[in-house]
Length: 321
Ligand code: ADP
Ligand code: TRP
Image (tube, rainbow, N blue to C red; front, side, top):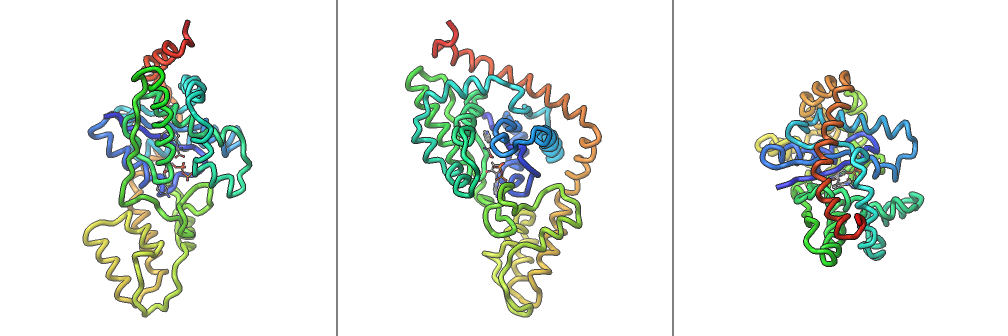
C-alpha cells in the first residue's frame, strides 16, 4: 500500500501537524511504502518572500527528518524538484469543473479571513490532486480540514479515467479518529495561518509562555473542573495514555488545582515527549548538506515513480505525438 502526504513549508511545524499527519506517516513506514514531500509550490499561496520560502523549505525538511521520516524507508523530496507535477496539474485542469473549486472550504475560509484571492489559491486543489495522482498515492493521511481536497482529487481522477481509461489511481484519505482536529491556544483549529499554534521545536521558555496563553474557563481553584472541553486537556491527551490520562482526568474532577497547574503539566509532558526529536534535530541542523543530499536522492526516487505515469498521461491525451 502506498501511503502519501505533503506538508506546506509555510511556517513552524506545530503539534496539529504532528498528530494530524506526521506521526501517522512515521508509523506507516513500518509496513507500507511511504511518500512524503514538502509542498513548496503550495506554500507560494501564502509566502511571497523568496528568501523566506527557501529557508522554510530547509527548516521543514530538517524537522521532518528529526521527527522520524527515514529517507531509507520513505521517498522524501521537495515538490519543485519533480517538475512533472506542474505538467499534470495543467492536464488535470481540463478535467476540473469550476464548481469543484468554487465549493472548496479551504479557499472559502481563507478568502473569508481576508486573504487576497488569486488564481493559485483557487486552483490549489488541482495541484494537490496532481501531487497524489502523479505518484499513484493510495492512502493519504490528513487532518480533517484536508479531506475535501482528497475528495476533489478523487473526482478529478475519476473524470480523467472516464475519458481515457484506468490510468490514474484513485486515492483515499485517512483521518486519525482521536485527533481529528487539534485545538489551538484559542480553542479553534490549530493552524499556522491563525497565529494560535504551539510549535514542536520552540525554545523551552517560549513554549511555556505560549501554553500559558491557552484559553480556559474561569473556575475557582478549589472547584472541580470539566476536562472534556478544556483546551489544555485536549492538548495534553495527545501526549498521554492509559493510567496517566486517567490520573489527569482525576485531577480535574477533584478540584484544588487551577488551570495554571494543568498548563505547567502540559508544558512538561510536551517537552519530554519531543526530547529525542530535538536531539536529532540538532544533528540535522548542523549537517544541512546532508539534508540537501537526502532531498536530492528522494527527488530522484520520486521521479522514477512519476515517469511511467506522466508518460501514460502524455500518450493518452495526445501530448506526445
Ligand atoms: P496549517 O493549517 O497550520 O497551515 P497545513 O495546512 O500545512 O497546516 O497542514 C499540514 C497537515 O497537518 C495537514 O494534513 C493538516 O490536515 C494537518 N493539520 C494541520 N492542522 C491540524 C490540526 N489542528 N489538527 C489536526 N491536523 C492538522
Ligand atoms: N494541502 C496540504 C496541507 O495544507 C498539503 C499538501 C499538498 C498535500 N499536496 C498534498 C497533502 C498531497 C496530502 C497530499 O496540508
